[in-house]
Length: 186
Image 1 (cartoon, rainbow, N blue to C red):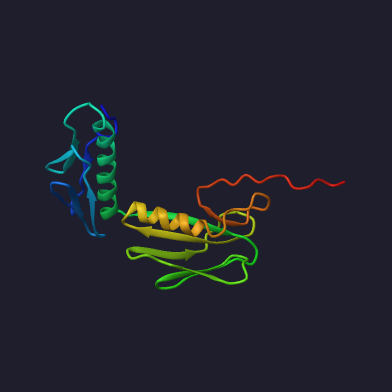
Image 2 (image 1 turned 180 degrees about the vertical axis):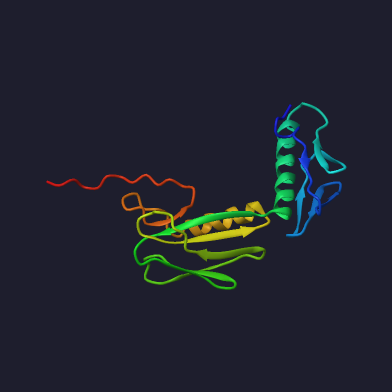
């Protein structure tokens, strides 16, 4: 039995779940999300508990069971609380500015980079005291769709990954960057 698949999902008050034949629609105060249900998996809503049920233990149903439950749980959490990712900008001369539909980054290239923000995602720039040498700012990416929030954070980070010697670049707030030792004296 799938350990993840058999866990029930608690649906908070104010969240409406609609189960259709091939998709699950979840609507809450943040937004409205839909996810496809893998073949052979069905959902049951009993009061405020949503459970995923599979027809048998034969392949591929155990894998689909955990996947379907995880996707549904992400939708429920997304419409009720939302998801956030934080990126730290580290480096002398680096700058970041959040506009209405884009983020403008100066990351040591010959030109500033304007990164467009997809629909449903909000980005803000904060100054937090992190204790990181040459810390500039923190980019906070938030939204209701976990996959889109993670992809936007990964795309922004790919513009300038952390340097191995000085640690300059964009890094996740929870990421520990191990610096290499530079050249020793003669």
